[in-house]
Length: 217
Image (cartoon, rainbow, N blue to C red; front, side, top):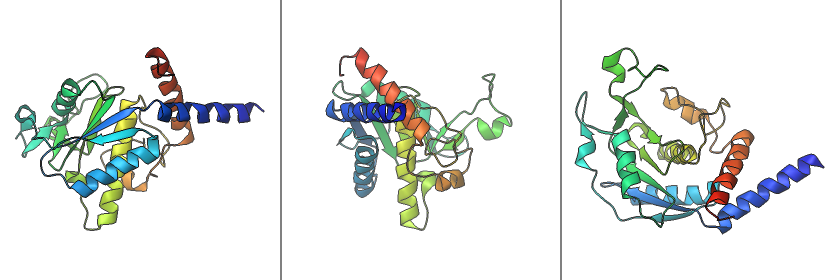
């Protein structure tokens, strides 16, 4: 009876999030493939049940550009830019770029991870505030000669980064889409395109608390 009650409550919470219309804006930068944009939009709607809107294409902000090891855009600058320029009508915003993006990787003490020449400007797949209202995904390091694999990768990274925005940390379940890529695209390839049951439970709890506060439930 207890198990049935828990499942029933989770179903209600997910339904509420759909009914209340959580709004996701998708911001393409540069010449991002329009078909891939549509695919990401559809994936978010199916996996999270949120409403999505595709925003007009915009140029990448020049303040994010760096050329320490190669021409890249700083992911931390991009998510800050997206957050500051997000319309009030949107709850979350996801940026999409085909350019390489990077961060400075740090250890548990807040120092640049060694060796500094490697991790001072570290190329990544995506980055999102956890929790927060913005994330950025790059297709640059997800490319593959097999288009199906490439599309699966970018869909997984999109689900993953939005999960961070919603308050989900990295998951220890190696099949969960929220697992840490641990510096390898192979990790992403092995993961399923879905949240594990534990992450789904955490998500529903997080959404309930958040939208009870702002009066959407």
